[in-house]
Image 1: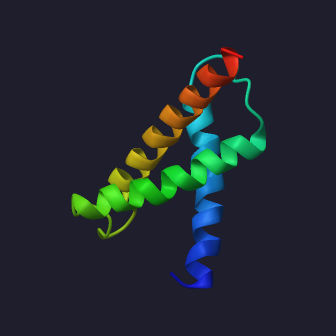
Image 2: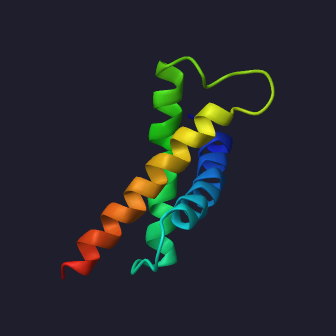
Length: 87
């Protein structure tokens, strides 16, 4: 992965993290940096999953890849929020 790929993964991860946080209902007790970190991880894992299912590179907007990434980010935000609530 080149530097422009890393930078785009970070930017997309920020967007994915915020969208994932919006999907989870209620108030989350995690900070914005954790949201961004979850979004970056979800974007990278979601791209790998979309590539495995051959829906990563389509003509136009890759809606399936975005949905996978946002779903993973929502799961990550919810899981991290639940782990913070137990403390």
